[in-house]
Image (cartoon, rainbow, N blue to C red; front, side, top):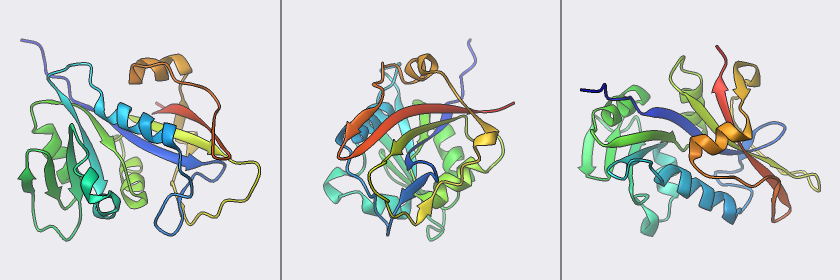
Amino acid sequence: MSKQLQPQISVVVAALKPSYGIGYKGSLPWKLKKEMAFFKRVTTNTIDSSKRNAVIMGRKTWDSIPTKFRPLPNRLNVIISRSYPNVNIVDENVIQVNSIEESIEVVKNQKNIENIFIIGGAEIYNAFMNTKNLVDNLLITEIENSNEVIEMDTFLNFDADKWEKQSKTKLNSFINEEVEDDIEENNFKYNYTLWQKKN
């Protein structure tokens, strides 16, 4: 009998270079339809059709999703908040937990999960990224805007020296699709990138 592979853990985030800003006053300072479609495809698609992916987020991120769009469909939604007293399986698509460790344990106890995606907000991203040997991949949409100064007050605590940007071929292979380069939308230009921890 073959050994069950553990699902990989990937952070999925859009960030404005060079400071890797990810938000302003609790919301995104951009509206990028193609990027949102990319996020949906990456976090939903699986190679094994009998499996689904898990998305892990903080309660504020959950609350920011319009009610009609949540839970995010065809994915297991795991919400972290210190205010939850213990693990609460709301239904087959939503589980509430009160810590990062609990979120991973709960997902790994599910039998049909292919990949785990961390989808925000900043506190959750940074806690996952800075816990040793926890995150396997960073899927960062690197956004640029050379025309104007974009105000940001929330940043990714991203130490590029500890991570290595992978080739486009490796990115395409990882997400199982061919990505565009230098996408331009609403005065922003962006590229999808894959980073992995340096040994």
